[in-house]
Length: 107
Picture 1 (cartoon, one colour):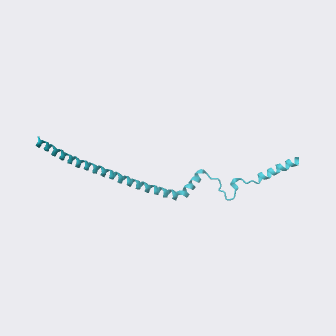
Picture 2 (cartoon, rainbow, N blue to C red):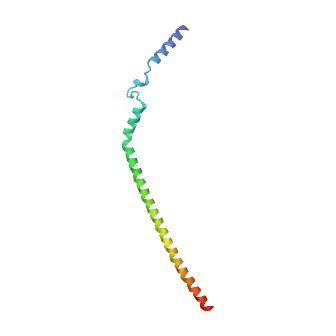
């Protein structure tokens, strides 16, 4: 029985000594800091970020132009409404004056 235990312990030792640490794996990067990884990621994605930023700026400019047009249309609509109200008020005043004169003639 001692031979079995001895062979098991030697097998365990062999298997544990044959393992490689993760850092010595062929093709693996050496450990780096988070800041270094972040800088590398930012450098790799810089063109993508710049393109997205330009697209967002263009979209913002387009939206601003639309808002200006809507505001202008609102001002024009308000001006048109005020002009129409003034015109109808003038017409109403003329009709009211004509009706008063007609009542005065009858009375």
